[in-house]
Image (cartoon, rainbow, N blue to C red; front, side, top):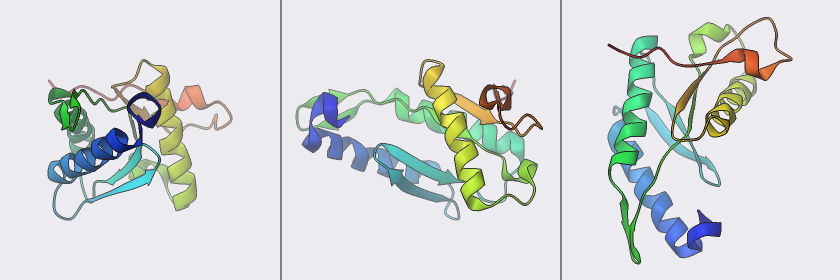
Length: 138
């Protein structure tokens, strides 16, 4: 964002995106800026189907309305890496964050503005084998 729009507009985009993310989650969930243009969202105590659907809803909500900045409207999209922690056993927080990050980069490589689900498999040395499309709600 900063490279494209400059730091002032980039900061406006980050602030507004933060507000929209906070408005998109439940009061007991967590949203935080994880670094640069990345955010971390923790959806607490939810079923996998809810997490997948909610993540897609958040992505759509952000993409539907451009952010009004001091220089005019700017469209914002999100690439999301989703990790369902119950599928990962007793992994450390660092390991879970790394796996979510792998899924995030898979979403970026898939063309951006999409959700990719981190999937634990025995083939831990092959990141692509752990990434799959989240099931769509019908």
